[in-house]
Amino acid sequence: MTSTLGIAVIGTGKMGAHHVRRFGRTVGGARVVAVADPDGDRVKEVAGTLDGASAHTDPAAAIAAPGVQAVLIASPGPAHEEAIMQALARELPVLCEKPLTPEPAGALRVMEAEQRLGRRLVQVGFMRRHDAEYERLKELLDAGGIGRPLFLHCRHRNASSPSFFTSDMLISDSVVHEVDAARWLLGQEITAVTVLSPRATSAAPEGLADPRMVLLETSGGAVVDVEIFVNCGFGYQVQCEAVGEAGSARIGDGHAMVVQAAGRWGGEIVQDFTVRFADAYDRQLRRWVAAARRGRVAGPDAWDGYAAAAVSEAGLAAARGGVRTVVELADRPALYR
Ligand SMILES: NC(=O)c1ccc[n+]([C@@H]2O[C@H](COP(=O)([O-])OP(=O)(O)OC[C@H]3O[C@@H](n4cnc5c(N)ncnc54)[C@H](O)[C@@H]3O)[C@@H](O)[C@H]2O)c1
Ligand SMILES: O[C@H]1[C@H](O)[C@@H](O)[C@H](O)[C@@H](O)[C@H]1O
View 1 (cartoon, rainbow, N blue to C red):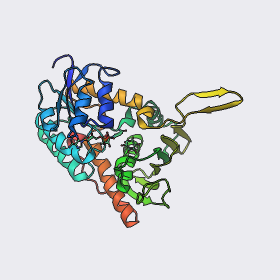
View 2: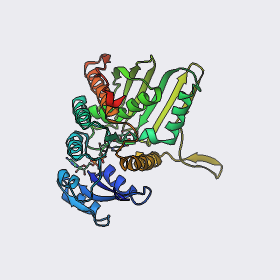
View 3: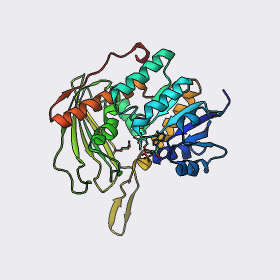
View 4: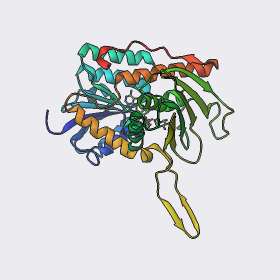
C-alpha cells in the first residue's frame, strides 16, 4: 500500500463535505481521490476543492476509480447497502455513516458478505465512541467507578430538523446514536423498546412526532431513557447521565467558554453536531485511516450496525403500536465475537 491512503467519498452533502474537508487538514495519511453524488453540480463543487480528485454521479464509478484504497460512505441511509457491497466486492475497507442500514435485513446481508470474505472491513460512523467525554464515561463504568449501572438518562436535542426528516427518523436516524452508545457503555444488548409520543411541539413541521421519549431495556437489567427532541430551537445538546449503585456521572453539560462581563455571566450553546462532535469526527477518521491501512476496522463494526438497526426496527414497531416491543436479535456470528 502506498504511504497515503486513497479515499473515495460517496455522498457529498453536509456530512460528506465535512469529512472531505477533514482529510488533508486535521486528518493525515489519506487523500480523497474520488467523490460521488447523483447531484452533478454538488459533486463538481466538492471535487473542485480537492487537488486532482475525480467527480462521479455514479458511486460505483468512484469506488472503481484509480487509486481508491478505502471508501467513506456519507449518502442517505437507504443508499448505504449498495455502496458497501460495491466496496466489499473490491475488498476495500469502508467507513459508513450511521445508520449502517435503516433496516436489520440490509445489515445482515452486509455481515454475510463480510463472512464470505472472512474478515471485517466495515466500520460504522457512530462517532460518539471517539468522543473524549464518552470515552471517559466508558472508562469510569468499566472500572466500576459508580458501581453496577442502573440507569442512563439521555437527552438528544437538535435546534431544528432538516426538511427530509420523518417521525421514524427520530428513532432510526437520531436515537440510533443512543442505542449504540448505550450498548457500548454498558457492554449489553438492548432487549426491549417502548416509545412515548407526547403532544408535538408547535415548532415541528406538520405531522412530525417531535419530541419523543424512548425507553430501552438492556440484557443486564438496566434502563435507558432518551428524550429525542429535534426541533428544540435553542441548540444542539447531547447529554448522558449514568446512575449506578455507588454514584452517578454525567457528560455533555457544556463545551463553549463562559464569559463574565458587565455584571453578567453566560455562555453559548453550540448549534449543531459539526461543532459538538468536531474532535470525535477527527479521531474517528484518524483511527479509521490507521486501521484501514492494515485492512482492519477501529470502532463499531457491522454487528454493531446490525444490532442498532434491530433496535430501531423494534422502536418503530413500538411507536406505531404504542406497546413495549421486544428486540429480535440474530445469533452473533463468530467473526464479530
Ligand atoms: N455521525 C453524525 O453525527 C452524522 C451527522 C449528519 C449526518 N450523518 C449521516 O450522514 C449521512 C448523510 O447525511 P447528510 O446530513 O450529509 O445528508 P445530505 O442530504 O446533506 O447529503 C446526502 C448526499 O447524498 C447524496 N445522495 C443521494 N443518494 C445517493 C446515492 N445513492 N449515492 C451517493 N450519494 C447519494 C445526495 O445528493 C446528498 O448530496 C446519513 O447517513 C446521515 O445519517 C451522520
Ligand atoms: O443525522 C444527524 C446526526 O446523526 C446527528 O448526530 C444527530 O444529532 C441528528 O439527530 C441526526 O439527524
